[in-house]
Length: 82
Image 1 (cartoon, rainbow, N blue to C red):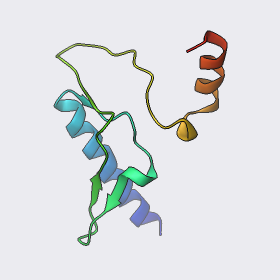
Image 2 (cartoon, helix red, strand yellow; image 1 turned 180 degrees about the vertical axis):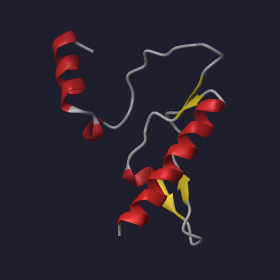
Image 3 (cartoon, rainbow, N blue to C red; image 1 turned 90 degrees about the vertical axis):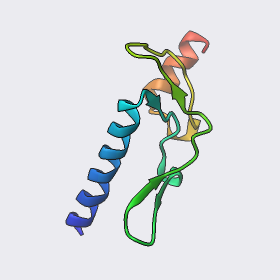
Image 4 (tube, rainbow, N blue to C red; image 1 turned 135 degrees about the horizontal axis):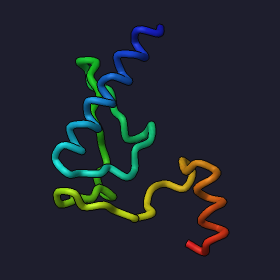
């Protein structure tokens, strides 16, 4: 149902906001890394590619699971030799 989807999306947004407030970038956010607990709340998993940033630090890293990259990212990386 739509309300259930909204509930999960809201949780995901809050989780990502919390990570970002602590200077962390997850880098491998995909369905397999979003778990649903017995209580119905999500839990993020697999922080193996996560990166901690200092205040106002930017990152240019290119990491993640290639099967979940947007096509324009893959095409750009092929054209640029990344």
